[in-house]
Length: 149
Image (cartoon, rainbow, N blue to C red):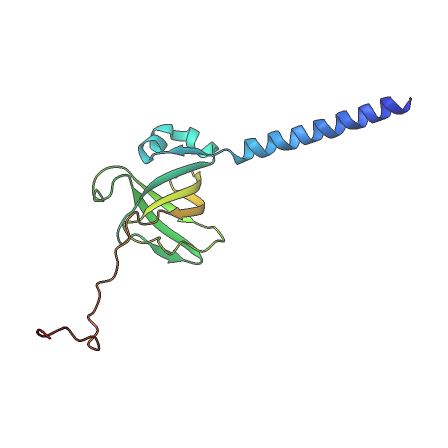
């Protein structure tokens, strides 16, 4: 085998290996964004895929158990007693965001099990779109003008 054939075969093997690794990374990194009703409509198909689902954290549903965090998300804020909801168990290693609390909009990334519980490995909480300043307290050291000069 001559030198050019060896380099050609080696180059083809390297390009093929890199292509295979890239394809595997893209395939494994795919996540489908679904709403809670869409997730329920998928049925058994939802358990085979890695998914992202968004909703509002139901007030009073956040509970910590043995390192896991259990909570419920609802489709629309303020509709805790009606509409679609989803029980979520967060088992990730990252700490939960500071903005993750009751009524927060959360995005969970993970898989749905056969019993309908979503097992999240990553949680994101939406930041407030409007920040309000603290009410200012008047400083007594600054005197107000009390008349004319």
